[in-house]
Image 1 (cartoon, rainbow, N blue to C red):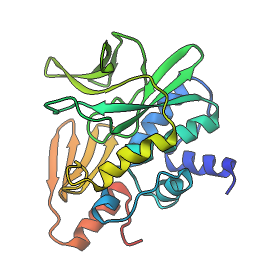
Image 2: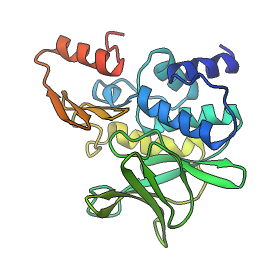
Image 3: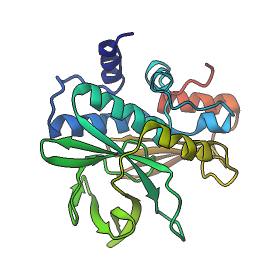
Image 4: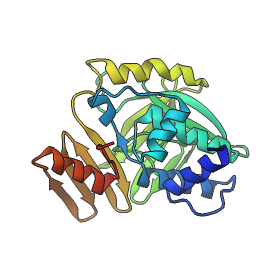
Length: 256
């Protein structure tokens, strides 16, 4: 498959039908479509299927086999798409701060995407709380998005810190510093997330995808469907029922 064929397959996978342009509207649509069509999931980790950060392997998994992944897979592949469309992309390492009692290790991958002289934070590698719209990288910037509100603030040690407004209080989501990273720099933190007994990805199945009015989330095989009107909870009783649930709600076919 040529790069042009791969790009077309990727755009088809995320339901992007417009002609891509090097502008904010295209970047916004690509990020939003990605979050609404490709799930965040750790199922390979729980089933002892080795992860690969090779772009060819990630493309095969996510685009060809319609699976999902986590940040080191999702943002690596999204960066590949953006670069091949002509965007200037810089990869950064981040610290995920939400619910952490102390400053944690760097174990998150985020993207800096340039359009002209402006730079935007893009991230399709978080399952629960994440801006669906690129945020301009600027100290003190506030972004309101469909009832959600985020801001970036500069910290002397942490670098840029992304906050979410939650019940009238700002809570930290993650921070990133502006040292460009190479693909090899993600191998060690990804291996930690995949194999270390303290990794948050090892206790239970996690699958998430965004919808127009909320999200669908699996934790420990319980599915919760969040909408503006409430939450529906489904608890599959058998393995077959669970696999049908994954296929219907997330497009994941574990029978492969």
